[in-house]
Image (tube, rainbow, N blue to C red; front, side, top):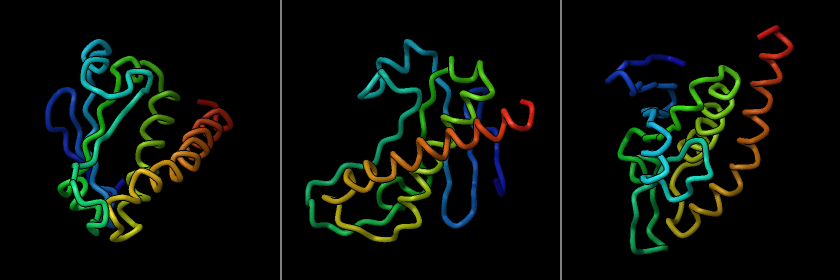
Length: 134
């Protein structure tokens, strides 16, 4: 983490460097369920929508400079859960940000590809916490 700023009691913006900026927003679980496409998740981000699948886009095009990740408030009740979930979302977003420009039609496939690595990344963070006695 390079820099962060608390924007509101439930929001923190983190500049990870290398063009990766994420605003994490915690939402009460019921509100989260109403706002996200898949309520069976712990956190969620969305990319901007475009109509031309061949249009080449960068992460700035997708996120407007700062990705917004909505997080279930209940995730904040566990240090391990919080670390795994935020690490997972960071892995996916940083993967998109460092990939460079790509056709809009390829983005969901790239996210799906990054997802498996993100699961491992989050699990590894928790494993390190456990090994460190946390």
